[in-house]
Length: 151
Image 1 (tube, one colour):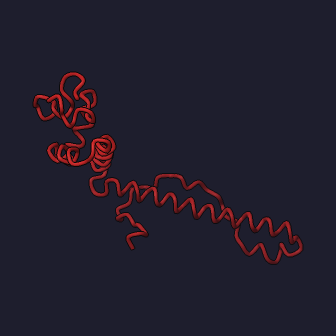
Image 2: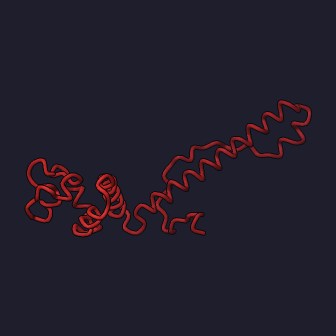
Image 3: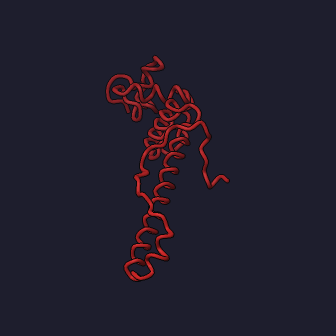
């Protein structure tokens, strides 16, 4: 159901916006870039077909996902969303490594407190680990993203 005027999709395609327009609830006239992005990547006709083929209660989520994926593909034409997933996976892995290093440090310090006489001989073998924040988006790489679940 259309609120007023034509939706962004109908404006983009220069057509009349019918009262039952499949696009109007998800591509409002006040956000033309939303439909333009989706149209650029998927094509308006294909988006309309996708929206018609899924249940109405999933259409808003679908339109949001299509927009997000289109934006990712426009920003990174090679990897799109996969590039973001790869970067997030790398951040998780770096955080897990940092956590393991800090847990090792804590264990070593606890053992030094429990056994102060052996501290010189046993616990100085482990180097002190510098804790650094790993919550930085890594620099863009020319290597394709690696996912352990695909190997």
